[in-house]
Image (cartoon, rainbow, N blue to C red):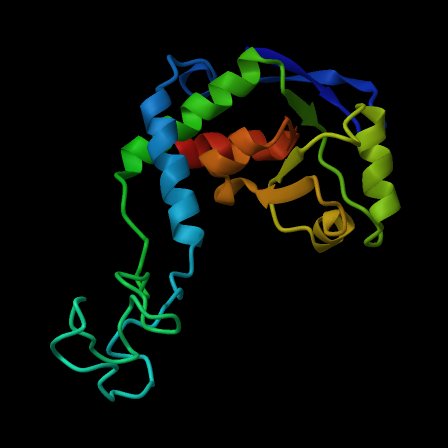
Length: 208
């Protein structure tokens, strides 16, 4: 597939970019996408949640009532989970949510996500650019030229550009990623992708 290249003013240039059909035009695998997105979200979790069970609660262990003759169940201590202020039954404990996936499966998921973006015309190719200084206004103006100022956008760049990254930091719906860090979740989470001309080849390298 061939896409035209635009400048940051929203105007077409005389150049085009050919997207590799082996990456941007495959038969999408929805289950691979699901697994990759699930892994990404799971790996973001800290897993530091903790609750106090019966053994960890610091309360009196005195007997609440006599053992027999009350007509009810035997009363233990104030640590009992059935008593207000007692321990929690089977509460969450610190754990690691990370899990691994095959490299080829993750590549298939990225290809599938990129294919969906191409099919839905949600990819725009930009010529390589930079900003002289970090300025949010400059980034917003660029988005306005493509009518994307109110949408979730993902800009994929070829190398780390501090001025471009800092220009987008204050925008809640804008995200900038290096081509080598591209992942399935961020691709699908964005309403529209902006890919710089030089990063197309980099995406092909890391995805094949």
